[in-house]
Length: 412
Image: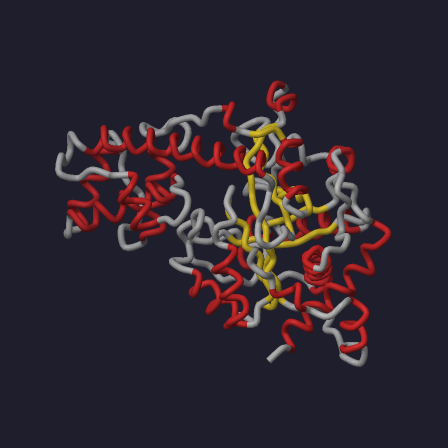
């Protein structure tokens, strides 16, 4: 079994002694949720992630790919080279069937019952157990079958316009993806094929509008991200000519997802959608008292937000509400769209976060860091094997996590 660098760290009491006279910063810049090229990412490679993070003084960075942990090894290498503490996370798409029947949207604004859900601070190497590994492979296989069906539909639109231009799953995976091909890879591959085949912007527009069924393109063809987002919106999302609905049976229910996370040593974590561009909330999230009860009933005591899509006012009120109720709260940027934005976490419109929000998110990151460290040493982390959170130890784990991160940053 591959050795994890945290296993060589001193025992907790030794780390406390070594850093007892050190001044601990109130917070450092951290980003607990990014996707990498192992699922879909705006980053072309891992090196770009770490060079940007280093330039922005990011101290802690969390990988958070869909369904897979294949990027963990490369992520560790980049973390050690650049002295950025790594968090090992994973993201799933699952179902709450009762909510689906009632038409209740969770954190997917378009699909009632559909839930995005993360596992934080997983063990390294990733080991979900034999049976859970089979379930994960089945989820990946079903997702790729859906993608292959969408490629077939795309080719059905392309061939009448230009028979020489076809898309291939194997070529898309080889050129643009690592482990998973996702719908955003299809938009990238189509945009790339169009610009390679047609050198004149006017010809590119004509081709795109033909496969749109005559609908006018509003994208700026000098902006690749705009084109890809428009292709995805017009062709690959629900109602689009190349859309293929996922097989509902391929989604695990939330209890099964939580079991996988716990078996892999992680902390179950709910990703919050919060307010949309019109200031609206999903049915699941709009009543914060009910949301709190629903999550605590499921033994979920950790949540993450992507502040870039939220107003600062709504974000601040929400975060303080759950922080006051002893939740771990972390922030991230996702970076699972074509737009290569900064890694520094900001609210909607790139509005800077207040120091109290950064402090809360930093404390959350440090609990996860301490959890990883303790698990690596064969000790109990933040959650019990049954998923019960160790609320009584949260303050102590926050402090320990700060020491572990500072020890990491001070090495060499």
